Length: 198
Image 1 (cartoon, rainbow, N blue to C red):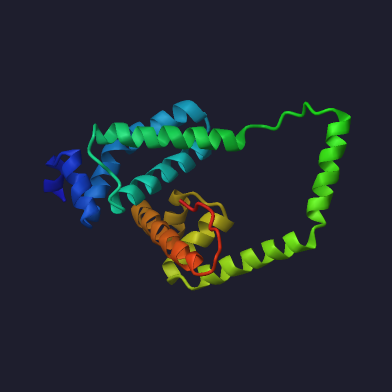
Image 2 (cartoon, one colour):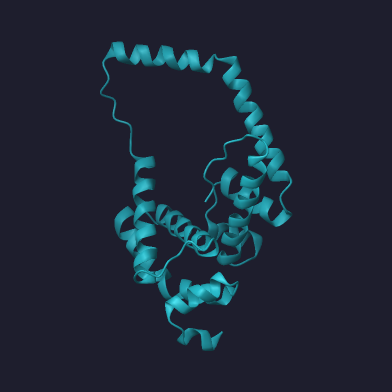
């Protein structure tokens, strides 16, 4: 591994693309402090920063392994751009709801919500979807099942998953990536729209 530390980022990316996990470990080592610092400086919350940081490197792993990384600038700039986009996404999801509707509008919306909740066909469809997804998860290799359940149902960060499963963060990220690929393949044969798990 020591000799790899002298390699340029582009060469390390190429090596990782070809299956050399040590190359990725060096890239992570080089940029994790800068990426995490950048995220934390914007979100001002360590838990949120950890989640965005881990999601950033899931995206990095996925794009490199899927041969979607093209060398058109610095690797570090590309990673920062991914982090920035994920910060924007997470900020939108956490944005508080501001109630500016009139009483009439609120009543109309609440009646609509009651109608939606009371729609038995929709409830049955959702129940079937969750059951199918659960069945698909149970068909994954055991290590992938564990990561999916810890991430999606217990909402653990990848750092927490790594600690709980006694593996490296890179291994936890990799297992989630392969679980996502496998679930998408299964969903394609079941006419099921799978949420973005990465």
